[in-house]
Amino acid sequence: MRHARVSRVSFGLTGIAALLLLAAWVPSAAVAQTAPDQASACAANASSTAMQMWERTGANSQMVNALACAWNNANPNRPINVTYVEHDSVVPKLAQAIASGSPPDLLGMDLIYGPQFEAADQLTDVTDLIGNDPDLQTASAGHMQVATYNNRLYGVPFFVDDSYLFWNKNLFRQAGLDPETPPTNLQEIHDMAAKITALGLPGVYGFYAAGNCAGCNIFTIAPHIWASGGTIEPAKCGDEPLSGENIPTVLQWLRQMHQDGLVDPADQSENGDTFVNNFASGKVGIMGGGNFWVVLAKQTDPNADIGMTLIPGVETGQTASFAGGDIVAIPKGSKRVNDAVDFEKWVLSSDQQINIYAKLGNLPTRLDMMNNQYTSQSPYAAGWAAAFPVSRTPATPHFFELINSPQGPWLQMLQRVYYTTDDINQVISDTKQQMRDISCQ
Image 1 (cartoon, rainbow, N blue to C red):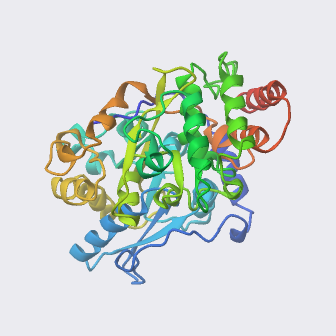
Image 2: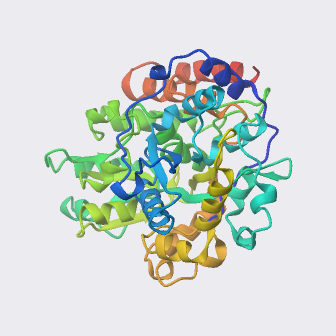
């Protein structure tokens, strides 16, 4: 099983405390936005007995819906009503809901945010309710690490999602490329993407980069930097951000991909809402994405022929992956804690791990469930395992402010790289200073 590798750090309260303070007076309309992901009919329930569950957009909505539907079918007297919240709005929206005394009963949370909310005492301690459940003994170690704070448990693994590089074999064939040979370095990505773009097919481009989504880029673009020997975020005050001799090279490559017309100009407006749909459309040759993207692409086009490899760096042999996914937690203030814990136990059960997670083409969140009739037969199983030694997750108490904020230095840097002619070294210098300032707040 591909365990997310998350270094445990001492999480300060600065970012989350500021959001909680902001939530006390910011009107709900300021943070609430219409989400493109929608709960399927059986995952939505208007009953007064329904537990309210939030999940972020741009994640694995198909599997979340399937889990909710199966739960609702088995538990008609305590159903779940799933609401999707725009990814970049989850943190402030949850902070506001907690501050106002109206939190959801369950939260599918990007694992990166778990420690911040745990340290701020905004999640329910479920140690005494589920901590001894034997199914947790083989649960994803990375997820369990971020769901644990001061030896107390605040959530359980919800889904595993590492990042990979995917290529469309049908487009490779049309461009005269070997469909069984993926790019192994940045120059090869450029050259292969150029041949696909040169086909001139309507709406088809060789590469994809989301222009207005910080999270999309840390998931799929950051591994190019990591693979090339670079680091991005400072883990603590005093650490040097954006370190590594190849960072200018990677950023110049990203600029060249845009300047050479290998990325659809419409991608500039992508804020994460439709991120997972782009590769499945069949109009992108090469794109970073999550392990469940193969399933989505096959459902969109049963004839889709997709390759998957690790995300490469400047040189062949350099690879990396973002170790991610979600935990499911219970926000402080929920009046349905016991029911919500039952749901957490239920998603860990062998039946759901095999007949929902694995059957839909997703990885189980328990190691002992990996050897099943669905996962073991996947042609991508070896690729999933290869991510183990090269995957990482940013470890910083200021992840939202540094990386995931739409106004943060990470996205601002990439937008200057993608869409301006600003000097690359100056862009790096400016971003370094912004990151230093944030990390020392």
